[in-house]
Length: 91
Image (tube, rainbow, N blue to C red):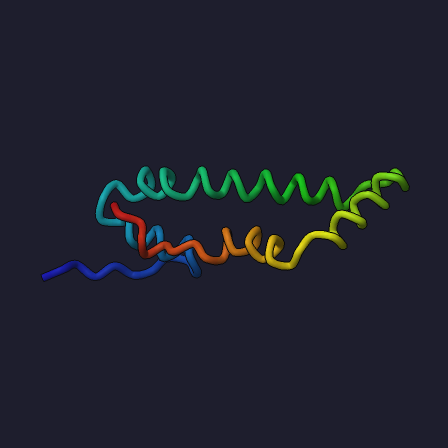
């Protein structure tokens, strides 16, 4: 009989941790989540810096580039985070 595992936490991170609990939980969890989390944090910090520009010329450039960015490109950038399938991780 397969051992049942309760999901700890919510969302993707909780499900990933629950899937890894049977095999050196924390080590496996870190191997899967840390690189992804680090990438997301770096992008958020970069976007935060862009959003808090104070130079009027840079602000105008930023706003211009956001206006001309096609919606499909913006959706593709967002999709890389929301299309992550935790159930496809093999442990």
